[in-house]
Length: 428
Image 1: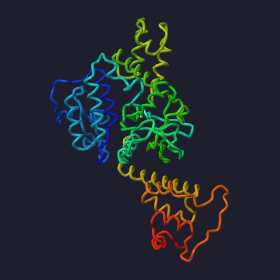
Image 2: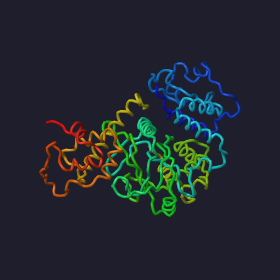
Image 3: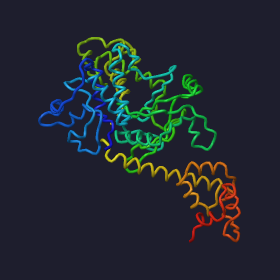
Image 4: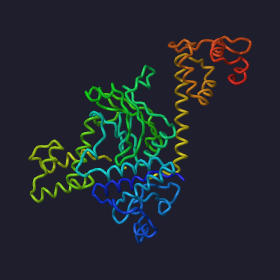
């Protein structure tokens, strides 16, 4: 019974908190009558689901059983409800829901007049929380991919299952078989209202590069499902000045834009960019001046018109079905990724002359069973086949049917001739 974070509920909770619709005093309880009141008569599940942080993807979405972890009622988010969600999600091991409730609690407890409490987290002006994959269609120089709620769930599930930090390097050096020092590490991923975010731990050198704007962009290496076009897995991320993503925004400038947008929403007392546009239009219709603080945040002149303000706010906007059988999809995708990586590393070993063509099936079998061990083998094995001329050379074999290169490798790997004859040699 996979329970995933319900994005519609999370966004609704954010909107209510920003509008100040929060109950901080009453103890939390959620009865059948409370659920019926949210559902309405006739039942409206598109409204009902917005009051829950959890979605059971095995259940019919047009039933109450599909929606878990209620956080509010009577038009308000309950602080005590979020605390109850944190406690239960921790017991159930549902990490994404646990962390989502935590982020909502931080907003509830933040002082309304303190923009810093809502701001993009940064360390010495270097962001430590970055929007890695924005919701919508992402266009790159190598093609397009889609990030929606299902893609986000897959990306997080694979990251959780692999269990390793994601490296941030310089100029994708990790993929180039050269020395590749880390610029930082992605310690965690979470889904926000605008896409998949990464919590980053930078190295001191990288912080300096970013603060000095010597490196301005980041570039994720994203695996995409060919059938759906969805992003499914993030392999690595790089600091670069030539990102493949079209219309990429600088790391530090992006932070300032998000802070500015949040401040504008706070000043106007609204929860979305669309509502902000309507509020500013209302100012103009009343012949009132647009608040100076907003113009400053948008870097506009005091006499800026509504069209300029609208264009600036729209520039902040970003383009967002739930996933079924998520566990099965994650397993299948992991197998596809492993198979692809296995093929690639064996081909690389062939090109570098670390194995002979006759050893390809043996190498594939080895890599499938222990890919990390095969990587170490390729790294340490000497070049045994000349590369560069593309001409196949005859291979001299001994009485056991083994060539000299195979015997040399066997000695390095401490493998007996009998084992090679038994497992490596194929008939046909």
